[in-house]
Image (tube, rainbow, N blue to C red; front, side, top):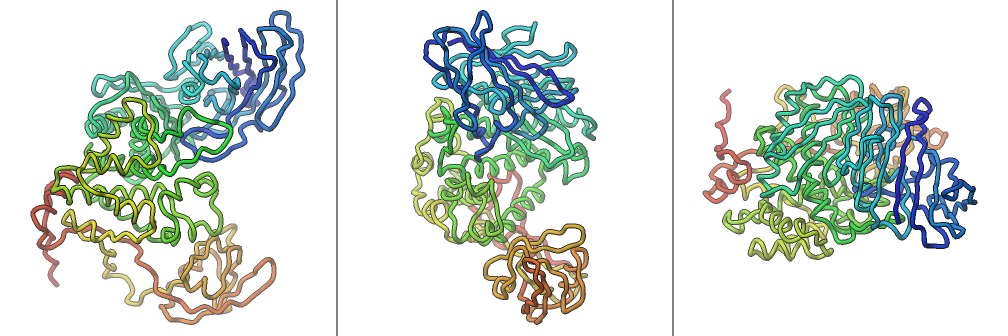
Length: 591
């Protein structure tokens, strides 16, 4: 069947695009059009069809109308009535500039096919063409193969490729860099932005080069970084030959914001290997109508997070202290999540569809992020391999084997294959590690793994200028609105949980004195562990008194530091891993 989509930026001020699907060679008694319920890389069921209106069909030629039946929320049935050519027309509202989006404004159209171009059921593998009807001064940027220029037209060999190839049209700033001789476009769209273009070109080029060095080669003939500068929080979605990222427009200056941008860029770029080519067998070809389950997201996302930060270190974009500081922050967040004790990395991966993307009040107590647990398990696995193999192998060895045997060949991973590859490529027996920390919920001894690289992992020492008394601890996370203080989460095994505080409680008084979201934490810090206090709350609109005895707070931060007397192997592990000489601990400062 010949399938041609046309997207028209017809009513940009109303954020409504008009679409046509022309079908030739129809042989079935009816055609079902299906809009995906999820986008690869974003593992949650979404209602993309909510913006669809006015879908109608007609015979071609002649234009005789054909009745259309809407079968469910995202499926339309068109009887062919004995003709071989059909035209389907509809409109879609799009006004959300996120990493997975259909967005239309008078200045811009960003098109992720899964949100606006339904597929023909039974013809996912058929070749496709997409034509754009946009203002003549708009530039179209995509990694799809060009099919024509008037109108701008593009080809995809199948629907999966179409969904994996976003299209951006408007007036973007586009520059091309060629790290390793491969053209990489940087397309920046959106008003404002405090970026320095030359710095972006240089630093993104360094990320690309360091990534290729780490893996060993590149499958690319071209790649596009789509950056949409906006006033929303950042995010990214990986594609085989591009990534679509949303970046706060003023995030490019200042070390914290710019480092976050670099981390996002490195993470999404590494996905061209991990997820897009090294992938679970179930992730492609895709079933877009339902959840697709895998226990491997801890590797696909977690190891990507680990390697992408290591790439920034290897590229010289993170200093050694900054790199270790980032790992320590991830470990702190992990240790601050009680759910790590009850949910494995594999289970977290499997139920991401109802868990990671849909957090609720009890989530911290029963769940752990497969991003964070996968990243930290990858860190410890890397140090374990380096030490146990006397530095002859590493997690990079495992990655390169996965790339050679699976990524480059297009062969998908069975759910149990990563362990077998890790054992075979390193010559080690890593089953116990996987049983404890990937499939199991054993507590990770980060200090023990750090010592394999001549480091210790300890709570950050208290600031000598800080108050002598430790502040008391409740064990709640709260949210504020117009000064009111509402309990969001109550962590297990904490004073708040034992006292009976509950999500939704509005705290209005501390020892009968009024508190607000601005004053509560300051007042709490004046009371040391062991202090008995009284909180006044409104619970479902009714006032209650809750007595609580404050506990001892967990460490606010952690750090890595060199171990006194680290042996030669540990120092070598550190140097091969970090890419810098190991340095002994500095003498304590005198009085």
